[in-house]
Structures are given as structure tokens and as C-alpha cells.
Length: 198
Image (tube, rainbow, N blue to C red; front, side, top):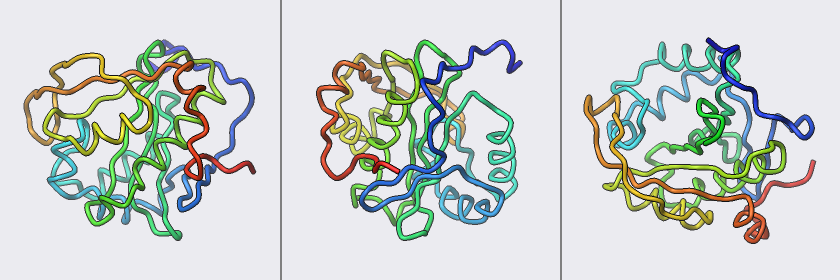
């Protein structure tokens, strides 16, 4: 039950929209479900993302957005480029001592640096707005592109674990990564990929 999950301590109320040089990150709404379903309904994405089922239907997107509206366990942003949805990024607070960064992009948006840019903005938001000492994340061993994104964001490899993937219906090895607040602070000058002050 939600009341059993400690709420992260906010330093101050954070903005609901994050902006970078090329992207806008905002909370998804029911108006976005068609776009989310269209982006997420690709086996190549689902097989690299633990909780996405395949096929991913509009009903899945509706349930996802409705759950987010009432659930403090996740801080999730829809990623937009020129007002066109391209993917999702967020932090899962189910384990308050180990908040976890996650992201995915529609296949047609791979290879353009959007995931790194969105991840950096979300990392900055998390460390600036919440009293956390580190973030964790993971990438399937079979997904070197995601591993590369995490390394570009300062995450350091911490081992391999088995995790269950909904689309696979089984567990598979995942490289685990950790980013401490001190490492983030030393890297905070990401350049033009950081959040813009509002």
C-alpha cells in the first residue's frame, strides 16, 4: 500500500516541466496515451525494458497514466522534441534507499542523443530536488547502447543481476550501475544538455 512507502524528502517543490536544449520533459496525461502506445508497441523496446509488455496497447498506456496520477512511487516524464513525443524517462522510488533511473525511446528516435539528454535532466532534477545520496540504474547485458548512456551520465558499473522482463516472460542478466551525489556534483557541468532554469 502506498502509505507504507516513505515519500522522498523534497528540498522545495520542483517544476513539473524540465527543459533542455532540444527537449521538453513533462508529466504524461491522458491526451498522450495514443502517442505513448504507438511508441512503446515495439518488441525491440519491450525486450530491453523490464515492465513494458508486448504488445503494448492503448489500454496499457491509459492504465499507466492513471496510475502515475495517484502514485508517489514514480517520477515520470514524457520526453518531447519539438512538441512530438519521443519516449519516457523517470525515477522509480519503490526502494527509497535506491531510487532507480529508467528510460526508453521510440525506435525511430534512437541514436540522436535524446536519451542521454533526457537522463541528464532527470538526474539533475532528482539530485537538486530530493535528498538522495545516489541513483541506481540498469541495462540488459545485451543492450550496449543503454550502458553507454549510463556511463556518459557518470554511472559506474556495480555488478550483474538477473531481472525479470515482462515481454520476455523470463529473467535475463542486467548490468547494474550506481551514480553517487558526489560524482554527479563533479560532473554537473554537462554543458547544453542540462536543465534550463525556469
